[in-house]
Amino acid sequence: MKAEILTIGDELLRGEIVDSNKSYLSDRLLGLDIETQFHTSVRDDPEDMRDAFERAMSRSDVVLVSGGLGPTRDDLTTEVLAETIGRELALDEESLELIRAFFASVGREMSANNEKQAWFPRDAEVLENPIGTAPGFLVEEQGTLVFCMPGVPRELYRMMDEQVLPRITARMEGERLVVRAKFLRTFGIGESSLDAELSDIASGGDVTLGFRTAFPDNHLRPLTRAATAEEADQRLEEVCGQIRDRLGAIVYGEGEDTLQVVVGRELAQRGKTLALAESCTGGLIAEQLTDVPGSSAYFMGGVVAYANEAKQALLGVEPALLAEHGAVSDPVARVMAENARHRFGADLAIATTGISGPGGGTEEKPVGLVYIALASAEGTHSDRFVFPLDRPRHRQLTAHTALDWVRRSLLGFELSGPSLMRRPNAPGER
Image (cartoon, rainbow, N blue to C red; front, side, top):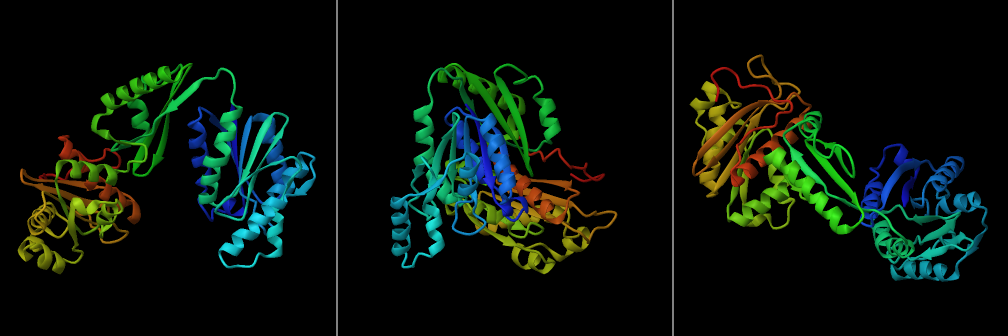
């Protein structure tokens, strides 16, 4: 089966919202071994919509449409699709009653324009929406299944799982290739270098390898096709094993596991705790750690010591050390990490101090300079980086590198920094 995803709405083309529906729908189709061939977005314009519908139905077996099922004047999906396929609109009384009941359940009176949501192309199959006012529908035209769903993500997700996927499954017949894919997360190497490193892996045949940058990570999508699920699973495991063997510690996670999730899991499994001493990252590392449920089991706490006075009072950094080396320096980063570890009673502690810009740099200490230190019972490791980035990405890359150091230390890997955008240490520095 060839699938196409069509999302509708002016707000998508203007960039007012991020179109996450496409990625979700494609991922759910892949679970049925259906690969999405096309992604299309179109304005709330009847002519453009008609052209998009005709193109999609001419080249795809399944078309998933998101958006344009609301009650307002710019919600045109139902009317334009009905016109495109030459069908009249018909009122579905059961849907109308369900919409009225929905409004009654929340103590509101239904507006007259909501009746529009109960009209569908003739012979359409209505798709129930138990958490919203916009039912979806399915029409089949010249062998193509066209599923229309609301654009609100939580409504679309439920309709896709409960209404759409079962119908697609029921219509899938005959022999087809089984498709299996995984999502590997990497950090510490640029996309082009990653491709070059893996040039002889998944280079042809029924195994493909996709690349996607999501700063500061790079993601890999190995995908296999085979006649049976067992064969596809085996091929996928083989290629993932080859990738992991080649890249080593650069691969840090799989699927939905972000770096903070992986770090938290490793800390929890080992019964280890972590403390933070943040300057240039301003609490960003603490925020990422505490985004993970259950982080209280391993995160002891942190200090955001931005000013020199705070470094002295809260982290015990001696004034003489600051005067001699400056706040952004190897000795200060080390003391920050060591004292945070002792004061919180943690097994590990991370410290960050740097110049995120856009101002504040000098020839000796340029904008982008950052020191990261990791203290443990075995000692303290510190390193110097210059990340020539804008302020938000500088802080993000610093936080990511710090978390990756925690992961690497727990797994016994070398505490190396990212090769992308790194500059060598200054003469005489560790």
